[in-house]
Length: 209
Image (cartoon, rainbow, N blue to C red; front, side, top):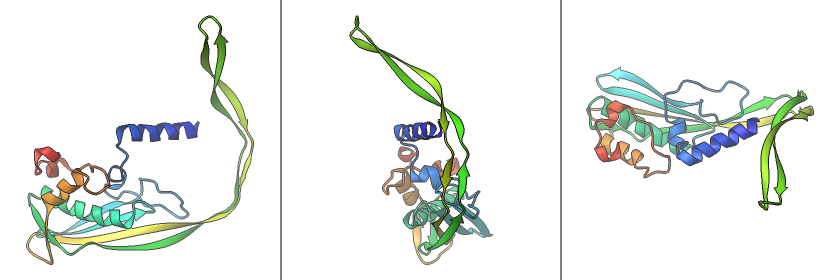
């Protein structure tokens, strides 16, 4: 049943084209994985923002297996642009994003999945001679799943962390917040359309909102 639900969710994402990298991972950081871990859940990672006052911010982004380094750099610049627009500015000054990566190995001991009964949907068909077609229906049936042994294993995970400092008065390079946000919303890079703060969207041309 879990596999059927997962397939249904994936089909839903493909149908709506909504489960893009931006949709899944561009968000405030609320959760990090705890050891041991082995997945790329969209619950993990996101951006962190700290104000230093006087229009100066430190922005960081963390990713756990996904998204990749390039996406982390992209999301750092996007958050900088979004923050700039929220503050009523059109440009910010910053150096290029700095992104570092490291790997982390997790050990998982062996375990046994207990045997259990599960419900599956079974298709039954009977040939109808009058209509020359099959009449089909589905019945729920109970299936016994035997115990399963899972051996011990090691898993290598990858952690990407980036940081960026911005201000509105001057610095290494001047960036257009409107240009960066517009580029993200029109998907000039293959990350999908991000969900931006309404205050930032109100500063953009209507054609990209």
